[in-house]
Amino acid sequence: MNTSSFIVAVRRGWTHTRRPVPSSMVQHCLQSTQPVAAARLPYRVKVSAGKRYAWCACGHSKKQPFCDGAHKSKAPSISPLRFTPDKDRTVMLCACKQTKGAPYCDGSHFKVIFRDLVKSMKCVFK
Image (cartoon, rainbow, N blue to C red):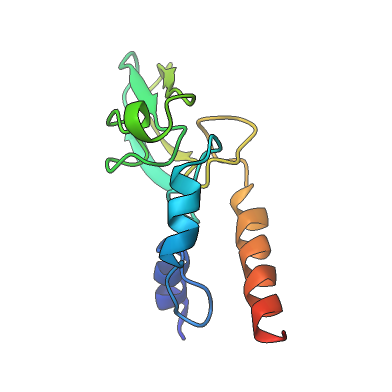
């Protein structure tokens, strides 16, 4: 597997065996009050100074990394984070929803990827 196909596989949430996440696991996550990872890697986004943005904090939005209102039905206890950049720039917005500096990526996705790999390896060696 080359680097670009690995990145695509990780972003889609596949393990190294290229199997998608089981639907039972997805269904369990949809009923949770915890955010779900929209992707394993952050989104690189150009933001404009003075414009208001609503970053999806629940992970259910189809317009990631921004909110589309999906939290109202799928995660009512999680609200989007509204922010206004002070200058025009390109930023990395968190997609794993585990960042401590929301909405910006702080590298927490490496822990998410590692945890997923450990889980998949445990399944292989059972």
